[in-house]
Amino acid sequence: MTIELLRFTTAGSVDDGKSTLIGRMLYDTKSLFEDQIEQIEAVSAKRGDEYVDLALFTDGLRAEREQKITIDVAYRYFATPRRKFIIADTPGHIQYTRNMVTGASTAELAIVLIDARKGVLTQSKRHGFIATLLQIPHIVVAINKMDLVDYDEDTYRAIVSDYRDFVSKLNAKNVTYIPVSALVGDNVVDPSQNTPWYEGPTLLHHLENVNVGASRNYTDFRFPVQYVLRPNQNFRGYAGQLASGRVRPGDEVVVFPSGLESTIKEVVTANGNLEEAIAGDSVVLTLNDEIDISRGDMIVRTGNLPQKSNELDATICWMGEDPFDPSKTYQLQHTTRVVRAMVTELTYRIDVDTMHRTPAEVLKLNEIGRVQLTTTQPLFYDRYNTNRASGSFVLIDPATNNTVAAGMIRGESRDVDDLMEGETKADDTATRRERSENVVWEAGALDLAERERLNGHKGAVLWFTGLSGSGKSTIAKLLERRLYERKIHTMFLDGDNLRHGLNGDLGFAPEDRVENIRRVSEVASLGYAHGNVVLCSFISPYQRDRNFARSIVPDGNFFEIFAKCDLEVLKRRDPKGLYAKALSGEIKNFTGISAPYEAPEQPELVIETDVATPEQLVDQLIEMLETAGII
Image (cartoon, rainbow, N blue to C red):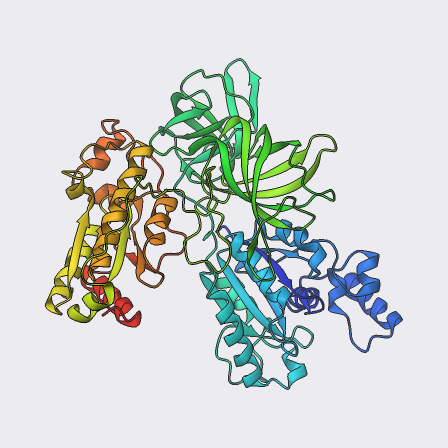
């Protein structure tokens, strides 16, 4: 049986006890050698400490031991019978933000420590923000030093409440709160008798049982070629690590940038051939055709292609000692591919203390900003929020060969509204509202408030998005029937219906999809302005277009609903036979197969149509509308 591996990082403010917590886990799980323990005991005694300083197990630099702080990222390894662990102990000081980004870049879980005496500090928020920015799927908030507040439950509850208020503003999915004392050992490895009011798991129990692989993409097969193996005339193999997805012999693949197609012949390892390799496996692939492939090329599945562009919209953390130079050309490394790149626009800098966006001309060490990049050759990528492996990159200064930035791809570069924190319109609005010249808006005889009083409910736009066959229209229609029974005025807009008339002149190319959603958004806005609950059912694959639909409806009246369904289920379900045609090549630009789908970043509601019944999902929608005061 293979023991799973969990990579996690620790973060928090200075002196919150991160290194001590790791030392406690190493000590209590008996992951230290006797000579290590004796050495640390001797150092602690020499310094006059009244206790064994467990932080010394991880603080390896002399400056760290002298100052009793963490400066560099320290990696430690330990294992239990259930799981293996790699820990990144990162610094808490503001000037080491880049170290925190480095340690968290491959982590699947982040532990944010908070000193129970101090409560939620700016650094606590900073590291929570960075963890969500890096799309770390699990966050543990460890309220440490409970022994110094006499294990007071009210103190713990107050900190939990404060941090919950903060993370509610972020895209944080799984947040767990645990009261601990790293120095004494309460709730770290063993349950504490000092916190009878806490009924949750210990920290180690949570680490042993949390879902591993939540951040890995096992759907989109991406294989960056690292090395070409040619030991003899009869063998040509392509070595690398599966960045995401899975691969089997017989799979049809295409090689980028050449675009040549073939099929997988073998999946080779030192221990023999595999029937299947998955994300994270290092293998050698052989093909049934002789194709010119070299390092930096990418092998993907024919029916599941990445996006391609030489203009990128990205978020970067600046790691260079020298400030970002807009006139400079950098090397951009994406998976195994290296191209030259220029930052064509610094859109804004993110203040990680307040999360506000501010105009900026340069980025300095440890600052985070949003940029537009242009590369000399196209990249084959996925958005970072759907595929961390193929959605990340680093910038390298060619003069020094130093890594100066780490980046996360948001999508293809585009014009970005100059919106700052506090404004009401949605970020990422790329679709523009075109207006004819010499026209003015003609208001009706009744305003929205009068229509809402007449109807007996508020107006709203419910935007159902998801892949074809995910059940968007089915759920929307069932919801409309339930609303009708409650005498709610509705308006139903469906993709196929509008393409019979209003959008009948549009195809399915990316620019046509954008225009399709622009028109739909305007119609939905008019329906809302007349006090209706407008139900929109559209694949709407691009987040920027859904953001546009949101931007022309007042805050609190737009609800993005993600109809989530596993792609394999959709292929089996396939009510219109579209997936079969797309996979056979009969339908081009089919979302989810040969065209991209950008899953919602922060939907108001996710409805899992392959898990719950339609009636259960409609109940969730009704509850959402009632809670929001729409009905």
